[in-house]
Image (tube, rainbow, N blue to C red; front, top):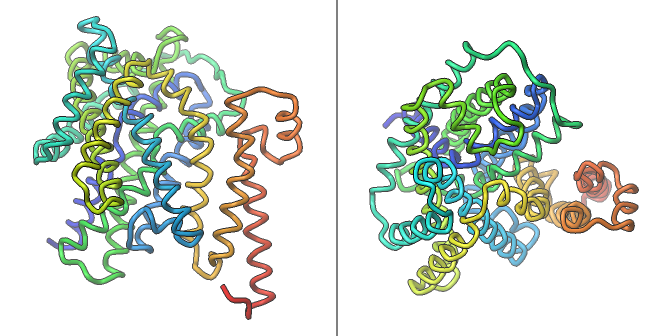
Length: 427
């Protein structure tokens, strides 16, 4: 297979790996709530949901390793704890959310059964697939993603040419930041850490030995994947914004996506999208739990028992959390994301910039400062106290939940200036 064809194959594979429940249900409501400011909200969303994940893939191209390599310059122990937190969040939040989206889009509208029944059956089936790996999911993924993309593009194109003339005003005070933080809920930056390692393993298995050749394929295929996500995101935000006078203001994310499909493609399009989204959510849940179980299995000498126990715990957690509303799962995820995302973003950029600016001391200093200054953002979603508000008043950008940005940047600059003035210091 020539490199051009290989690039497109990996590009579509990366796109499919990123393409999950959040990628579908988040953009329409962002557009819906932003109205004429949809493009500004979209800019924020694209920054956190495509640009930062793209840098994560670029960093993988340089590291040629696994997610553990992202934090090794801080320390192997830190890297292990960071990976543990990422996998824990993955099985506790985005994985159960796939069951909630399936219930709200494909089960409740047609059968009216309780959500606990949906999540129970859903994760029993997930467990069976996790314990019996095969090519079924690969085949589903191979054909599901193109079908969903075709339906979404049809919704977007028809929606563009049939949008109502009136558009309701935005509800956001800070459109860019609202979009930026909503992009956290896609978990795409985290997905970039996970997916890049899988691509590298695949390239190695196919006989690619040249480092430059592998870097080139990863970079180009990543652009293809992110360009595809960009088109879907912007298109869904656009029609969400221009149809925002056609639905009740309290509409949920899954209901809005279904409503847009109904208005543009009719009943057949709506039912088809619901079924395909349910299947895509299922494959995503299986992939998350398999990846998590593999990670812990590797930590315990490839123990099959550890794999099974991890799968059981993940599925039980999925049943408990997956019965909740999609909105509730998104809301409770905010504190965890405010904790893990700053560290994720910093690790991505430190691994993608030239190595002369990212020594071990820089890694350790910047990561430590990021962790400390992200604590007020994390606590802000758990409590409301005077001392916390006063603290956030003293930290630049802290009121916008970005209190870690300025201190981390200053630390990065200072440590590099010290290094340049003392080049003899042992790094």
